[in-house]
Image (cartoon, rainbow, N blue to C red; front, top):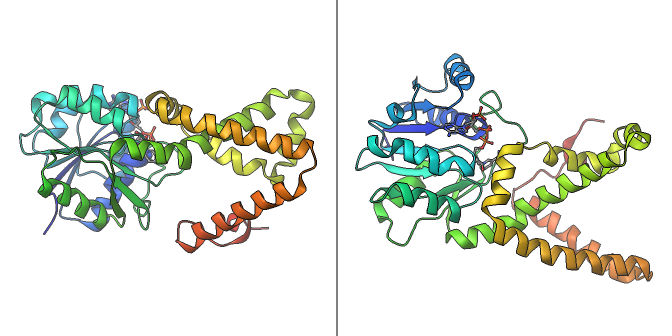
Length: 301
Ligand code: NAP
């Protein structure tokens, strides 16, 4: 049995269009309706054909929905939820794909009192944006974290779990604040560091610019992939997961200072011990199937 017969996706960029494509691939009988605020994105979505129907308003998109998935930047979740409030069917489940969860839960519950809201976060993505960037296999073998509030109906949580499993994800249930802390260190801080390193290199000015690009294979280019991620999406992530990010940043700064001291005072053993520990973390990630074992991320040489 299908977890939901009619799915509405609002926001048809990388993640929204990937959800639509994955639903059509895994559950062809599900009717997928889409909407995006940007007329050009709607036009492109119609041309690409990953939705059965693309509506011009968010309200029209949700009229007969069983599941509504909000795939817009986290700062826009509340705005979209307010737009659909009057037309949302009473038995519909409202979910999202936002990269932080407590602020989204608060924004949705404020404007959709009485609705069944189950926030979710597929831990999958790329540095690309827009409807052309999506693909049906994005969620396969990746985690999807659901953060249902304590009063969420069990049947709705199980239906959403089944939905993401059909898209190929492994599903985990977590408390929203805990999610935000975990993702602050595994995703948000790495993005902040990448933005900083690439920004600093850029600030070094014209003298070194060409050399930065020329010798980027020394490690720099791996940071540039992350630092090429969508500016609006990431602006919203940092503004909406402020507390957890600042807490992790404080710990990171302390560890960086310790590393600075180790270099200054020639503490080679200390450096080697840390670098050995970090190497085993990379091995665990590969062993758990969260990345490929190919050297240099499988780049052709
Ligand atoms: P994206 O490619 O930029 O797509 C977002 C789409 O939403 C854009 O087409 C945008 O239109 C549209 N939009 C913005 N405000 C809207 C509104 N008020 N009503 C309707 N549509 C609106 O971004 P994405 O990467 O798919 O990210 C979407 C969500 O997924 C974010 O919450 C993000 O945190 C989450 N997420 C992203 C990743 C990732 O790796 N990218 C991974 C997991 C979760 P315009 O920009 O043209 O105005």
